[in-house]
Each structure stands twice: as C-alpha cells, then as structure tokens.
Length: 212
Image 1: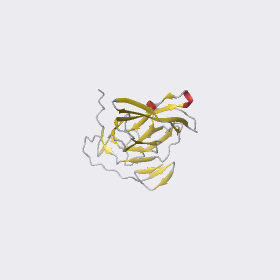
Image 2 (image 1 turned 90 degrees about the vertical axis):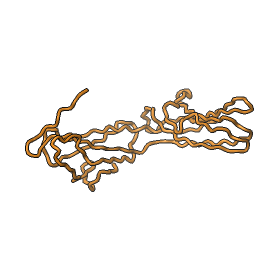
Image 3 (image 1 turned 120 degrees about the vertical axis):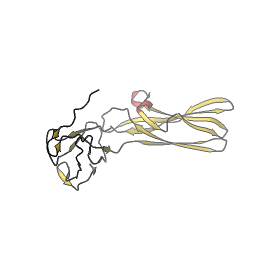
C-alpha cells in the first residue's frame, strides 16, 4: 500500500494541501422503449417474455448481450386468465457496441414468449421491429491544476473534455462541488470562492453547474 507523503508546511500560515472536488458529468444517452401487450384467449400459466436483438448485417447474429435491458429478461408476467390482458415496458440501452458509421447501425428486436397451456410448455417468437443505433460518444476528461509546490491565494482549475468516440456528445452537463481539504495538518481555516467561470475561453456567469 502506497502512503502519500505528509503535506508540507510553509511557515507562517502557508501549507501544501491536497484538494478533493466532487464532480459529475451527464450527457444525453440513446435508448429505446419497447412495449408488449398480451391478450389471453385461454388460461395461460407462468408466462415469461424475453427480448432478442439480432444483427441483420451479420447473418442475424444474436447481439442481445450488447444491450442493457431494464427490467431484466426473461420477464415474468405470471398467470393470465382467459379474456384478460397483461402489458410490460422495457428500456433498451446500447452498451457494448463499437462502430463508427454516422448513419448508425440497424438491429432487429423481437420478443420470445413462453407459457404453460393445459400442462404443456409452449413458446413463440414475435415478428421483429427494426431499430437504428447511432455511434456513441466517449468523453475523455483531463484536469489542469497548479503544481503542488506553488503557494497561491487563487488558482485556476481547468477541465478539458475530448470526445474520442465516433458519436456526438449531446447536452453535456458538468457540475462541481466546492473544493474540500483532504488533509489539513495545521488545521488552518480554508474556504473557497468561485471568482470566474469560462467555457472555451469565453466568460460566463460564475457557476458550479454548466451546460456545455
């Protein structure tokens, strides 16, 4: 285990400290909402539904594992009495794909329904629906801070966002908490005030919450 060196004390009222800043980045993601409604003409028992996602450009290869589906599948519908109806919604999020075509890539989504009828287990796969997944952004975030040996009453904190992904990063929101001292060996009181804020060199109203 690596133990960081103790902060250095610079005589009268100065010391070297480690700062911690909680920051969060949010951006618009891509997702799809799926809904399935079942109308039972006979009593159906132990109904479960799974979703299947295939790639028509690769011999309909199964790509379900490249998506996050909520709620998880297979999803239990339970028993559906004759003449009754049951519905479920799912949110489908692309998570494991890596392509660069700006026009996106098409996938087919279908439902696999299983149930028990008169003691027999049956299943059927629905017709598929096509979705188009756009390439995803990938934000690389770097920080620039003064060197730890510098003594200062004010310091710039520069955050650089670099999108190294093939997709556009939309509606990026950056929020930062007040800096806090991770250690303060002399117990000197330290507070911080946000003096200026700029985006791409242009000053904006000082704020810890920014829409980029």
